[in-house]
Image (cartoon, rainbow, N blue to C red; front, side, top):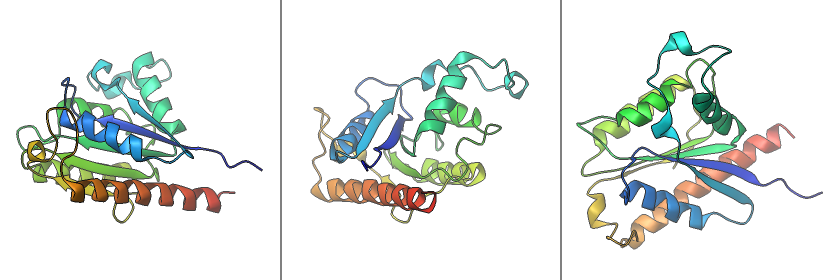
Length: 185
């Protein structure tokens, strides 16, 4: 019997072209084994502003597509900058659209914050995922302060220790997903 591939969705909290966060997600995707289908979701900038009154059976296609992508994934990796000591509004908006659907409940999630400092956004994002019921594995969070000293202008990570840490994060997420699949097999 052939093992089913693990589906991982990666989401950048930055919409900026050339973002170090998008570069990091691309690099992590390159670390994924052949048993992992790794997709970077790029539609969070198209989501309307969250309004709970609009979250019903006739909900807009854009956030239904987002929730379906999350629901169909075995795991999620987020990589975000910190803006004004917080989570970028576009990422928080996307996460808010999942509150009523329970899309992140028990979902394996890895969290990377890559910014100048990033500690406040990182803490806030972890608190949001706790509220959403996400399952963050041990080793499933990484804070990358001074990211521009670790990612060059060609989108390459120049810090070997960071590459190892990101590989460990991916492995922790994949292992948690595998354990969950075994429990439900």
